[in-house]
Length: 381
Image (cartoon, rainbow, N blue to C red; front, side):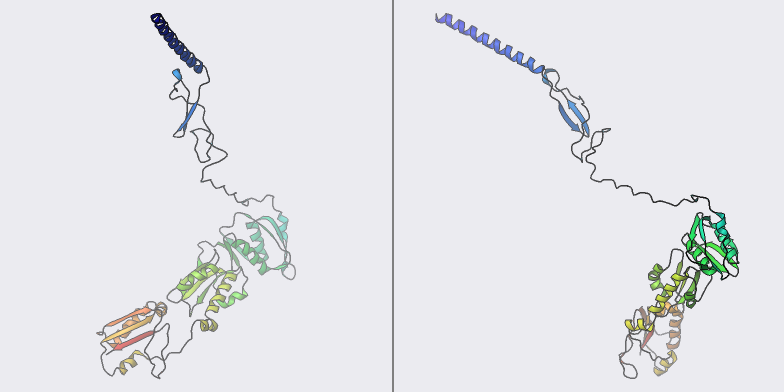
């Protein structure tokens, strides 16, 4: 009986094992028929999609459709559509709109009858020019001024100009010159001749030279040149400050040896430059900077006499930088004169400075003060 029961128990165990195997096999077949899970990986900007292959394992190197980046700073795969919602942190600057430029050709043909206008009995003229070419209007200006016209180059555009009141002939020429200067040209006036010249690289010898005091009487757009003398100012030091008063058509050149400013521009600009220079060199301006004292000086020969025949052991010279710039090349000759008078064999030392202080007391017992544009010579015996 027991034997029989033990044999049945073994048979039941074998049947259970077979049932478990059949269940596992059926379950695996059922899972194989379900939709495969898709795995997406981004490698070096390329999207790789893998699905389970045989036996439920992912199939290697199986690519899926391109995936759009969800991060605005994330770059998509090559050839993929960029992320429109975001973008690179360094956004490209929007291109500035192009400026509107005037056409060289007029939109409508000019009316030639506009050039038939003549001055009245009082010599006044009122005109309205629309889309007129420069050669035509300048020819009209020369005929109206009873002058001849000379030019080698003119602006390539056209002129629109109308007056609201009668103008004199001189005012009319100045009005034309204003529009020429705006285009880099100028109208030079000589005896009976109007000459148009380009201001860039213009020959300064062709530009009429006037006295600075005459600038107030000239039309503001008359192109001239002047020479301004400097007294308390130094040309090389003020050139950068005064250049802002000159237009792009003009020039301002410092002359070191003579301490002058050579200026060339419209008379209105030069008038303002001259006014500022004179204001800075006025007595009122000097009084605000420093007091001026008249120095009592002696000649080098008199100094030698005061030495009473004694030979200096050393000579110390302190000279002003302003004096050096004024003298220019003559500064060296000044030192040679000191050597010649006080003794060429005496050692000479010194320096250029921005202010000199002489001895502690003057001959009449007064205190010495700061001096400028002077030279101090000390002889040690």
